[in-house]
Length: 286
Image 1 (cartoon, helix red, strand yellow):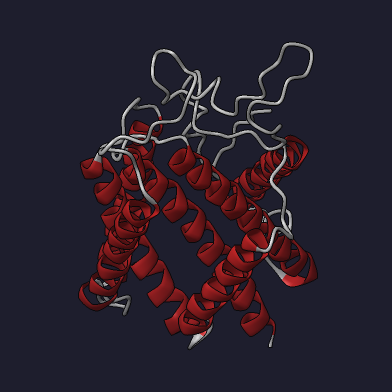
Image 2 (cartoon, rainbow, N blue to C red):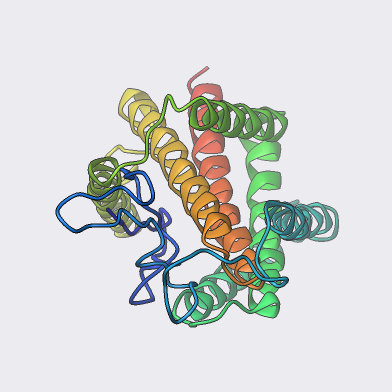
């Protein structure tokens, strides 16, 4: 059984290919005969040899170390850009307009680069790192603004919260408390689609003069909505971990590690923003 997955924001790694590295979630023993079936896990392996009868990881196959290194590089770029933008783009009264303008431009640029990578058949380190740098600029200005005007200290809390959610998800995945099945994937995709539609609707109402929009980002409803957003981020992180695990098992090309880093970064940024929003609501209510 194979399944496709996507990030909370963009489809990728399998959604843009006819066949991706998603693996068999309910596997039969290799060589088991059942009505003429061999139970070969790699019969549909998109990275297999032309014969498609065995798994042979070549010298250029992706490893977990490759994923860790490239993910650390990508996240490090986000953090570095965020710190620099916090320092170099102050949000005081004299510089607020300029800093906001640059942050908005960076957010749009990050969106364009992420779309370019999403629909590109092969991963591009330049696109991934370019997205990370621009996303970091936006996050730096946003975090500085919230910490300065609404909730002092919220950024440190949000970072710690992101680590906590990610660590708990990784533990639950490794212990198999979270089992990524086709049903799980379908449920998460449907829930995320509804969540994003509500976010867009809320933003549109707020933009056209409805105050807090539909109320999904403030008060008790905002808190409940934020918790749902964090849970969705954790679910997508589990999907990302499954894809990485399958890609390594299938002997995906080493360059695919950049795609894994891209996907993991998108998910972790999602979790950080949802944690940041939730903590900001708590602090503003107090």
